[in-house]
Image (cartoon, rainbow over all chains, first blue to last red; front, side):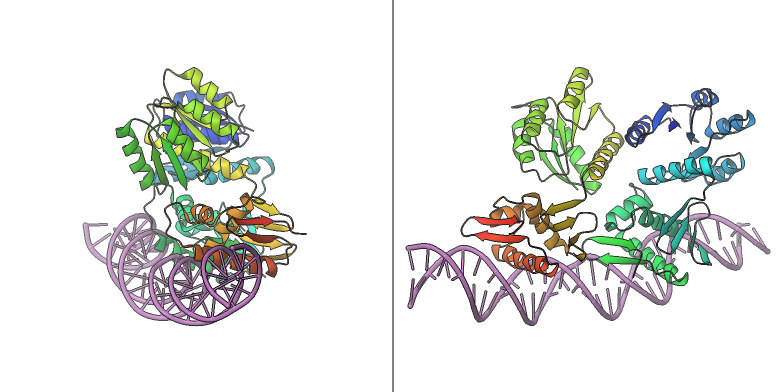
Amino acid sequence: MKLLYAEDERALSDAVVDILTYHKYLVDAVYDGADALDYARADSYDGIILDIMMPRMDGLTVLKTLRAQGVKTPILLLTAKSEVEDQIAGLDLGADDYLPKPFSMELLLARIRAMLRRKETFTPSVLCCGDLNLDQRTFELSCGDKRVTLPKAEYRLMEVLMLNQGACLSTDQLIERAWGYDSEAEANTVWVYLSYLRKRIRSVGSRAVISAKRNLGYTLEEGL
Amino acid sequence: MKLLYAEDERALSDAVVDILTYHKYLVDAVYDGADALDYARADSYDGIILDIMMPRMDGLTVLKTLRAQGVKTPILLLTAKSEVEDQIAGLDLGADDYLPKPFSMELLLARIRAMLRRKETFTPSVLCCGDLNLDQRTFELSCGDKRVTLPKAEYRLMEVLMLNQGACLSTDQLIERAWGYDSEAEANTVWVYLSYLRKRIRSVGSRAVISAKRNLGYTLEEGL
DNA sequence: AACGACCTTAAGGATACCTTAAAAAGAAAA
DNA sequence: TTTTCTTTTTAAGGTATCCTTAAGGTCGTT
């Protein structure tokens, strides 16, 4: 799978490229919007990851131009926290997904996988744990015919747990992966959200369980 | 996560240690190559950051010696700009990554995260000793279909024994590796936990044995 | 037998964790 | 803007669990 990654912050770019490469993706990195457009026009990529804030041409313009020229490659937008309105604009312009910065590598990889899968087979990207389902597109948690849309923080935490089901994750790991590595969130915040998620799981009637292991962390399991 | 940071320039070292500590890493700092080698040999670090230019022993020699002794801890090399050929040499000698000086903190943090993540995914998550298994992902001890989640202190001790199965480890060594070198735990505490672990092994029905050698130490063996 | 090394069990106390509620922050609506 | 609603975070009280200490064992060595 071949990806184009446009990001002007060199440090971040290098790190991301390393990890994507390690995960078997073939990655071309560019550092401004104009280059991104040039490369993307070649239309030889399976997916494109676009930062919005870039020199020479911003990500939204790149996106618009590509779509106008009939390039249908799936595009994932990277948006800073403050650019919420850009996210919506981006989706209207034909982006396939967006990811707020800062993001965990795991999340980026999951989104990329979902994006590529969607392109190929149009399978809905739903994470499962026993009878519990989490739709990455609609942010809905469901079991049987009961469903509920999760708020952002709850969703991100649930996504992390789903992606690592069975594994035991410490509070710090959860903060790093669900709130971002530069977050100042405290342990108590995580506990509160775990409590919320347990209530959600009950409310949709799933058997799944988030169990705590003192001094170790938390595990999402099917239950029974 | 525990890191060893070897860097002779004191001002830089202090600053980096501060930032790493702020980011929740447990950091030991050493200021020359010989110390780096001594500390690293204990093999109790999750990652090592090695400057190349250091007094008493250069980083590449430290790296080479460690790898020759079977220490597999991931190592990130810090190289001055001019030492491009050293970077390549470093990778050949078994470094996991390198970072040219001067570097930004963000880049260093990103590389460290990438390095540790890589380690996680490479390391098989289940340790075995005969019919006894210890899952590092779930902290579960199992034999056949019987399994039990270990509390943290029991887990760490069992992990040390598993990683050194067949070898005889003294009470002091066990304290140092399972409780930390600066721990004030007493011998009796270790005995108590060894007792707990024996009971756990029985409860999952394994043949594995923790045997004591009077005045020497303890050994974990398959049994029979 | 006596000593010291090692084993096992039980109980106290620290604290990690859970839940609820309310305050603060942020979005949406008026 | 101001109001209202939703979402996020902080705070506080209660519970259960785990770590450690301590005390009384057994076993081997002298």
